[in-house]
Every structure is written in C-alpha cells, then in structure tokens.
Image (cartoon, rainbow, N blue to C red; front, side):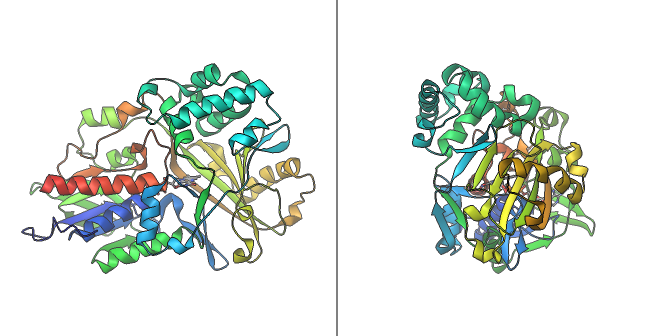
Length: 437
Ligand SMILES: Cc1cc2nc3c(=O)[nH]c(=O)nc-3n(C[C@H](O)[C@H](O)[C@H](O)COP(=O)(O)OP(=O)(O)OC[C@H]3O[C@@H](n4cnc5c(N)ncnc54)[C@H](O)[C@@H]3O)c2cc1C
C-alpha cells in the first residue's frame, strides 16, 4: 500500500488520530504507510471501539454482536492484508422473527414465501418490494422519501406492521416514521444471507492493525481521552489530554461530529449550526453464558410487543461453542435514547428484568441455566437517519486547516458497519494525499 507520495516531503508530517476504532486504526495505518508520523489517541484501554471484545476464557467475543456481509469488500480486503483471511469463516446461520411468541425463519426469499404470520398475497408483495430495493443500483431517486410510508404503499400494511415497523421502532423509537428511504435501501441492498465472522474475534484484526501501526513508527496512546483541539498561531493543532498538550500538523477526528464540535471551540458557529445536529441512540447488551442451547436461531428479531430487548443473538448457534469452553453465548440487545434509564441499571437489575422473557421464547428456560453474564453499553451507537440527515453530513475538511472529521455518521445511506469505516478512512487518506500533492 506504500504509495510514497508523502515520502520525501521536506519534513515528516505529524498526525493525531482521535479514536482507536476501525476508522482511526485504518486511517493511522494508511498515513503511516505513506511516511507520516501518527499518534492514535483512544480513551479506552483497548483498541476496537464499538467492535472491541472481551475475553471469554481465552477467546475474544465482541461486546456487541458483530458479523460482516459478502458485500463488505473493504473490510474483507483489510482482513486479507492483515494475514487473517484463514480465520474469516462464511456461513448462513438461521435468522428469525419472533411473532406471536414463536420464532419463524425469515432470511431468504424462500423463507419469506413460507412465512406463516403473513397471508400468501402479503408475502408476494413484500418479496416484490424487497426485490425492487435490493436490485436498485443506487438510492438517488429515493432521496427525500420516508421508509415507513414507502413500505406501507409498496409492500402493504401487513408486512409493515408485522415485520418492518417493529424493526424501525426498535432502532429509532419515536422518530421511526421519519427514517429516510435510502437508508432502508442500504439495509436491503448491502446485506447477504451469508455472514462472515473472524474466528477468535474481530479483536484479532484490531490487535494486528495496532501492531502494524507501531511497526511503522506510529504510537498508540490507550486510556488517553482527548479533551480539546485548538488551532495555534503557527498553523499547527494542539491536542490536549490529561497529560498535557501535544502539537500536530494535522488531526483526524473519528469521534461523532457532535463530540468533535465540543472538543474544538474554534469551529465556527455556521459549521456547528449545520453539522452539530441530530440524534443518535446508545447501544446496550446483556450477554449470558448458558449451560445449554436456548433457541435454534443465530438471530431473532423480537417483533412481539412488550419485550425489554429488541434482538436475541445466540452467537453459538453461528460459531462453534467449544472455543468458548462449551458456553452457549446469548446477546440480548437494545438501542435506546442515551438518557434512557436502562443505561443506569445495574447488571443484576437488568438480569432480573430480562430473564423472565426468555421463558416466553423457550418455555423450558430456567434462570439456573445462566452460568455467567456481562453487560456493555456505548453512546452514539446508532445515528437516527431521518430525511434531513443527509444535508447535515459534514465533509472531511472542516473550516480549521488540518482538522478532518471522518466518522460512521458519514456512511449514510449505508448502515454503519466496519466496512464503511474502513472505506471512509482510505478515502480520507487518499484525499489528504491528493491535497498535499
Ligand atoms: C450493537 C451494534 C452492533 C453492530 N453490528 C455490526 C456488525 O454486525 N457488523 C459490522 O461491521 N458493524 C457492526 N456495528 C457497527 C460497528 O461497530 C461500527 O460501524 C464500527 O465499529 C465503527 O467504527 P469507528 O472506528 O468508525 O467508530 P468507533 O468504533 O465508535 O470508534 C471511535 C473511538 O473513539 C473513542 N473515543 C471517543 N471519544 C474519545 C476521546 N475524547 N478521546 C479519545 N478517544 C475517544 C471511542 O472510545 C472509540 O474507540 C455494530 C454496532 C453496534 C453498536
């Protein structure tokens, strides 16, 4: 990947990268490959951001369920480049929808045509509507339209109420009626039934990226929160942390634009008015280790009302449970407003609230099946992509020379995903290269 277009410049440029998720690490690697000196600042003590893992026995498991799709070419290439492609396993695990207390498979055209909660003509209409979006090569003509009304009109009320409304509600709450149709296009267009997982955990990729950055002279400051970015009179940028102030020729912030605005008081009011905008939900996951299998599916969307979680993801119905010491691993996931009381509850309280609902899904379930549990939460995990969202996506360049923003809030109309963060990072570094040339 070494293009060399920065090498040989009169001095070695110094870049700070704020955030050690996939976007920050990819950007740091690509800059380092081009001869830049990079320092990654990450507030957590490990790299990986929203995809980071924790050890279950001696194997990494993501704090929030993760897999990739066949269309995720940028991340697949990166996995290959990092020498991990032998660990990337593809398969078609069972994905279902919970309706009327029962889990029904819904992960292919044939399962849709057999999907019992819908009547025959509703299934055909839903399949036709999905095909239109899936095979539409680009979403340009859908811009400005709302997903919910398009689905009701083209797929019909039954499919909307039974399948899509619960999905939109669970991700976007009261704004679900305003979600942009191009984002919904992305969900159908980009996704494959075959899913890819990095055996041993995606954390292996992040550790390898961190090693490659260090081998190229880059630094990773873990457990170091950035508290300010200030342009200095000499044209450089000062990055502040609890340990002091460091000077850089350029800064790439991979933080949500909202947070970059808070850290950078010098960003002008006009910029803030346009880009310090919109809402995001936080993510919450309770992970259970069970002594036996809970369901048959990898993924169950909870489309029945009244449940305190929106998805049940039984990871070990997808990945071999032996690697986790025979533990059956189940995620109970949620997206909620960042001030939702769920984020303040203790793990014991969340367990007490969630576990009774597992009996509805599998009547044989007993709390004694649970041998261990973990709980994770993250802010700014799901951008709320309403129809105005597009006009509030910032460009890479900011009005402050040398300060760039690149974050998962810019990947619209695609749904956020590691692949799109890799792609953004690579495009940004090419752009910085082109500007310098
Ligand atoms: C529940 C859930 C499920 C998902 N499922 C999938 C999936 O199946 N497949 C997939 O590909 N993607 C999935 N994603 C999305 C994926 O996790 C993200 O797209 C990806 O991790 C974004 O990476 P990023 O580097 O852009 O941002 P982040 O991972 O958010 O990285 C930003 C980093 O900045 C750090 N930071 C924040 N503030 C500061 C500060 N002041 N100073 C220093 N550091 C700071 C954060 O700690 C974080 O590490 C999922 C996300 C969630 C929440």
